[in-house]
Image (tube, rainbow, N blue to C red; front, side, top):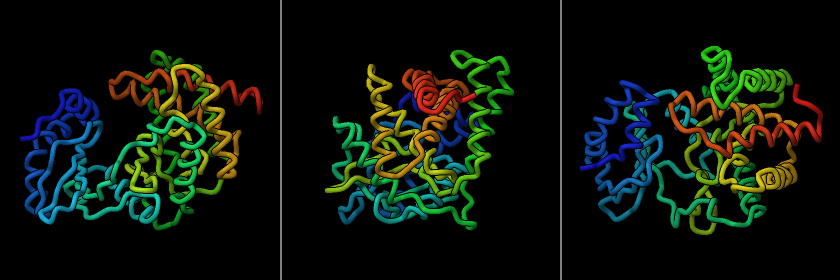
Length: 305
């Protein structure tokens, strides 16, 4: 019998409401379905956040990972993104059942995350290499969400909270929306992006590092660096760490530093808004990073507004 952590149950209910409640109740039957269909035994889950993810052992001894998600647009985007990223740099898909929200993936060993590396430059160079291997030019055959949906998400938050919602002020919301729009108006070349690439979504696999959990998004490459810049930050020296990471990414990937800083400001605001919408505690480093990105942009390239 699977026992789900209370905080995980509450997160799913907060995000998905009644659909989430029903899906949580169905997890035991989904596990039974998977065990029978693929002749495997599902073991105790990993630490859970937004999906049910657990190791499993097949009857022939092979180890895999079972990922169960509420079947929705985000899950379908993940499956589609995995098809574009198939190959070096991305975890391999063994089988899927899209209608039931099931993904069976290879088990990565030893599987520790990039966050275990203490050397900032080395970790950022590894992330840059993965980004370079994953990004492919957008194709008309893609049905992945466009980056404009992120802008719309921010605008929806503003409509719901026109005077802001602590700690996000009305001025920050307006500035972030304006920044989104001005960046999108530039019509830069678009790529199929991971959409959530950070230290905890990059795992060690034998002698290489591999990305997991793509959200799938179409936008410019600079935008896909932001989650990496925001995660695994020290309690102090926030500005120094972000600056160092940006320098490595710009050098390795030939990206536009000004646009990284502008996207960093806009997306940091959006990330905090997402947490507030989901009823979660917002990340303090995410919030502080808003002002780091703005400061660096203003010092190097002039004011955002």
